[in-house]
Length: 158
Image (cartoon, helix red, strand yellow):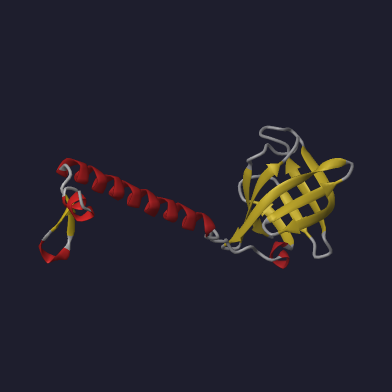
């Protein structure tokens, strides 16, 4: 059998120059579905890869000078003062219904929207803050015995 005769049984030339398989049409449909699923998977993978490489939007971080000043809690007795020198003093009500307030002072270290209130020899109080519409909102990340973690308070400038 010649080479051309062997290929005649596998493929035939269709009008318009396209080569079509003489195999089972169901198999051809199945192959097209595989290709379609493959293309969809590729598009999804590319989309996931591109979304991971994007930098998430960064909220504007207040500068250190905007934190400086005396602040009083809107719905409570807590007060805090941040000085330009890096010192702070605060009076916090320790939890709900606690009879007395705790006074603490020391230096504060600011990194972006996070502040560590240093108070040796005890561990620092860590909080995140946001200043908006003239108000200061703080959330205690590590409040120890003074505030429960996750406590959020809103202050106004004195």
